[in-house]
Length: 321
Image (cartoon, rainbow, N blue to C red):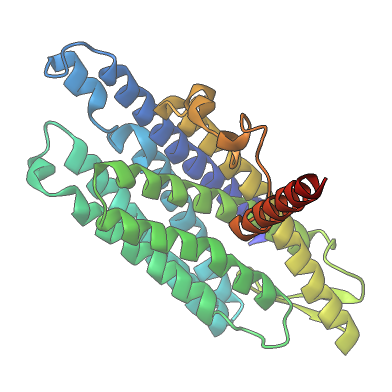
């Protein structure tokens, strides 16, 4: 497939994830603007409060990326047949099935959200369900893709399951959520798509530029069927450790990005620093009590008894005088 294919796939996933995340933030801005309208029942307030449609958010980029995957899979399929590589041709059929399913999702989303379409009466959960099937099929494709058990590329494919799982659970959460949590589900899926894109880029750089580890070589059977083998057992474990370290760096980048997005969303939702003015630290009510001590009631009683005894002794001495 080449580094160009991985770069296009990674860039496409990252753009779609960023586009969907920014669409969610834009929906919150519209919702906050509608809350400022003194007449919430006005048509302008209802338009601002309505969620953004998928036509302007992700259906067109998803369709374009799916077309590119389909074209690349068809070309690689015939290339594998010419090379008499049955494994490579079967892998391209799996990729083709996933790409077609995402293309169906993009087309169906566009038709459902189009005002002049006959599909406008269909519920939006239908498109979300198709998207869920696409992510599940993609998960199974990477989970079952074990061309060579000793190939180090399998470690990269196993780590790819993490962002795909994030997209799967976010889509399931979107199916069972209300209008408010619906946006959080889309935001989580957007972050998962960005992580998929950056990891695609990392796989392309590691596989096709020789920057994976020492003593590991690239072996290509056909355009879509390759493996990376290491010489010794120690080289194999070192390559796996480097892959895990690379993924941790990508994951840390996503944590920073998610924190930044959460800060923006919290600001748009009105969680300003003024809300913390009512916070009172523990023990603040004891600040004005200057006579506060740790003496117990029993110690006070013992002290009073001693004072009484001393007064009685003094009175006895004075009476004898």
